[in-house]
Image 1: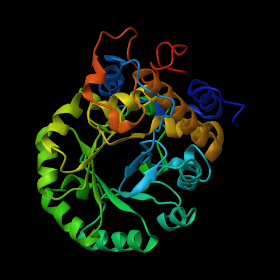
Image 2: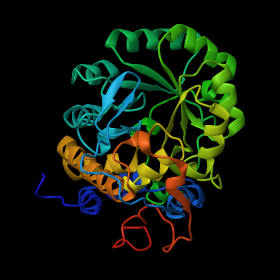
Image 3: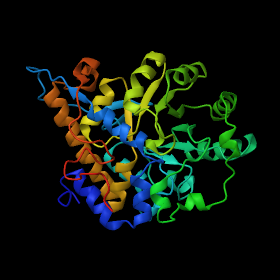
Image 4: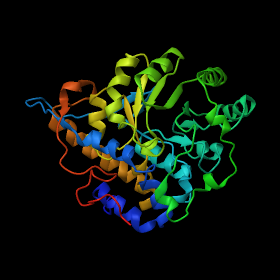
Length: 358
């Protein structure tokens, strides 16, 4: 596997060869006009580095601490529903790749197999992501299962009060196994800060809030004792015409003022993207599309290789920016610049013009 893929662009192309049109569109696409998804990439494309020279970068360390665990690089695996359409093992494949590489997966409650089976797949730490599909008693039961399975933290996703129109897979009438299942979405629509307080009390451990896009909600999250604020617009798959996450990040960082950790997803495709997000105040990032492409290209080994390539890009960027350790990184290492290519979901790779591999 190490010799097969020399770039993540090759992994994306291999994933395209292995996936049918429906699963490919589900992973690669966004909501409606896909404006939010493109803005996610545009935000990164509009940032440039301000490299510093004559800094000793003979020993570069891209690792970080997160929730008491040492991560080889500050990149989590984002929760993705129906991972089994990309690799037969589903979330187990992601968990094994994360353990082999040295990071943490955030396991979706909307994927197979059962949360207990994924937890038992490796001894490495994992985070569980929850969609609230029931009343408080339903939440109590699933939280008890998550605790018993030994998950490190609980992540509540809050940007799915209404399910969006994801039109790429609509063209082939394809839907995920999760969408085909009978799910009561009224509980997601009625989720409030008070509900979050109840879940926090039931859980009693580190709590992550995924789907924060404004300073106002970030400040409220801090007031409600959230440990990790996750800046996310669902990869551009929920609200169309929202800001890109990297553009939202500075106001969230200012509102949080160091009182919680910050994770960002949305458009992360290269090590330079990771470095830009960290420079602007994120403590870690998460990959969704790249995770799915890695799994589709080669299962757990394909995803592990995607992480290795991301790590190599990150260390190169750190060395050339004059940042031997992530703690040395500051907002002064980046600045605004004009993008040079049209933004789309794969605009980080020059050989994929237009963004649609149909």
